[in-house]
Length: 400
Ligand SMILES: [Zn+2]
Ligand SMILES: [Zn+2]
Image 1 (tube, rainbow, N blue to C red):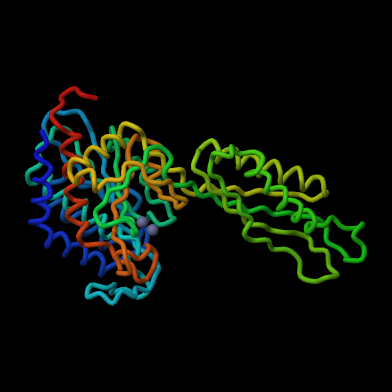
Image 2: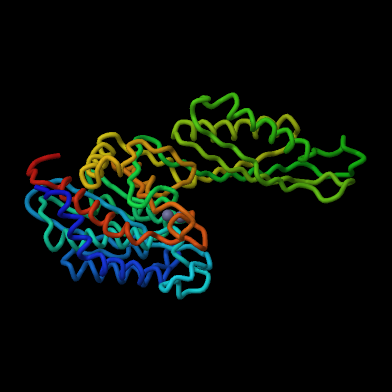
């Protein structure tokens, strides 16, 4: 059975110095996506020393640590991300990045340290029955390390009944947890439309097939997707942010290229937008005798937290930190996150932990050169994961 929640906070506070040193060490040595060689060495070494079964190489630099205990059949997955960003650090901190042009500006150093803190506790004195899978993934920042781990068999090798992950959030008081059920972070897709007409003299348009007019008409027609096709109650964005066409006032160009960004918070809305972009572009181009090619590339999926797992994650937060430190239903965000791919495969919850408010480095937005993960969150997040793991994997032989 899990212990009194205070027990986990006490343990982590006693070990906070060591865990924060670990965080600073990772911070000083940031690595970009799929290049987390030193970071994954450090993670794997810790897990091995503590007695985990460790697998390396999933998605290149990914690390999974497995710990079995008792006869329980439940399997839990907790994920942390390890990659940094191509940003020149300007915090002036003693443990600032040693690598020019690279910094931990999204707090993944802190996420890794929090999960390692829980890993240490659970190996040393965790009382649970079942299988604990700790997933340290590479390349969260726009390169889809989570997706690659899944494609390389993550959940076949490490089946999980539920998965959880946590991200820090500047602008929310330090240590406050934010939960949300359902769609929580947006999908993000990229579309390139190439129009091919027939170029010619600007004075003889009847001998050409003009991609400029077709492009102009398509840009306007695309505005009707959000105004006429998607449910007004659903968030949707279709932005034509680039249009490359023509060079001179007397030359009708041969082709035009447009770049479009698509965001949504609903898998059905996303599918609808894709379908409508393709049919509007094709039909409009056809009406101008211009050929159209639509290259629709799916980026990150909509992140959807499932009901039971979100309710469970909320309960853990309330018991650990008290109701005053928990926001039960936060707002959906237009940012994207690749844990969405894991949540497409398994039920689970992605939660936020307040990084702090004010003008300091912890109140500063992520992806900013002045940002820093809040050290006070290292023991809080570690205690949260330890308590969640013991609660999820309590004695339950035969439980589902
Ligand atoms: Zn980020
Ligand atoms: Zn991040």
